[in-house]
Structure formats: structure tokens, C-alpha cells
Image (cartoon, rainbow, N blue to C red; front, side):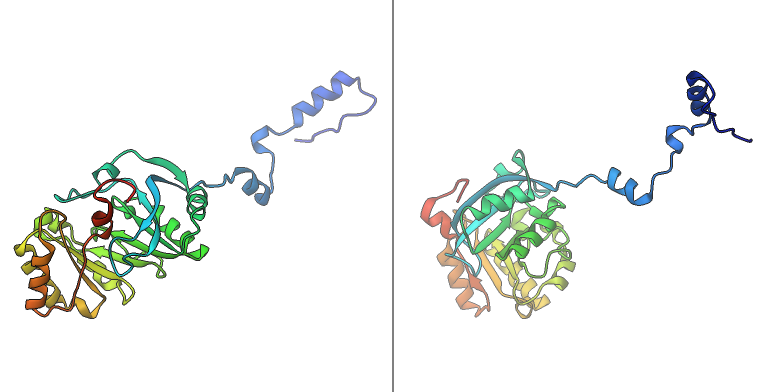
Length: 257
């Protein structure tokens, strides 16, 4: 259809009406793709549910005794019978990654440990770990071993639990995780009794775990006598590290330690 340009000789009302009649609807107005991208893109705010952030001595692993900032994320899909952080199953505070980094920086630490709960239950944990490494911290991750660790930044030292029968969660072990471990990672067995110990020894030998990374044997606090576990380890000449929870010896059980 031929569209006639309004003449300046027409009355103003006629010219306005003519222009409105030929103007395309708003949703048909062409916007350059680059401009549309700028208009519709909304910066993504990455947040995590955090139970607590605190500064203490590392009580476990090969980093035992080192001043460390702990970031305890909320939530866990497991329910181990000996769990000492049930308060982290629920609640917590929503925090952005920049806010977490800002609070950590206030302690001026060298070492940071991300723990739980089960930290990998929150998908943005991977982003947090990468951000911590990029910032220059020496980072470790404490994980149950039930969730996939393949996406964890290789700069992170992964401390992975292998759940024993006494934990009540032995069926949750994700054995494929072993293929992602290296010499800077660690495997931990938390032992309830001698039956757990014998099971752990059998698994370690069958899968030759000591050739993958350091192995930690840890007695359940208040249930298995550490001296008894030490005697078993020495008797059987095991290539493992016996660890006890230093923070509990110093301060007992409770949040923020």
C-alpha cells in the first residue's frame, strides 16, 4: 500500500493522525541485537546459604593446627549417626560470593576451608571455591564423598570422606570420585568401632587407596578410644595417618570451632 507523507500544508491534527496511522506497533520497532542484549541482560547475583564463617585452628587433616578461616555452608543430603554439625542442616544466611570474600578478608588468612553440612549440595559452591583460589588463598574442601567432585577446581585440596557401615550411610559412597583424586587430596575414614576399622582396612587394601593420596583414620569423638585405634594401626603396619580432632580437645564441641 502506498503511504503518503503528510504535507506541511495539512492541518496539524491531520498530520498527527496520518503519522499515527502509518507508524508500526511498538513491538515491531527494530532494535539492534547488541542493544537488545544490553537491555535484557541482568547481572547474575551468585548466592549461597551460609551457616557460619569463623577463624580457628584447623583440627583435622594434614593442615592440623594451621590458623584457618572456615566457611560452613548449610544443608546436607546425608544423616550420619555421628554427625557433629546437625545445626548446619537448616537455616543459615543467604550471602553473595563477594560478601563471603569480604568477610574472609577481614581475618587476613592464608588458609580457607569450605565445609558443611555438605558444601557441594549447593551448586554455587564450585564458583566460591574457584573465587577463593583466584584470590590467592590455599583452599581445602571437606566433602562427604556422596556427591560428584569432578567439577571442583584442581587447585583445591579435596578431603573426601569414605562412609563406613557404622555411619549409616555406607551406600552413599560415590566410588567414581576416587578417579578424580590426586596426591594433594586426602581420604578420610571416620571409624565408630573395630568393625568399621576392619572394613576400612579391607577397602584401602582392595582399592590401593594409599597409592592415590594420604589416608586419614579418625575415631568418632567420645565413642572409639583413640589409643585403641592407634594400637590397631601400629599392629597392622598401616600406611595411614591417625588423626584426632584437635579443636575438640582444645574447646569441646560446639559451633564456631
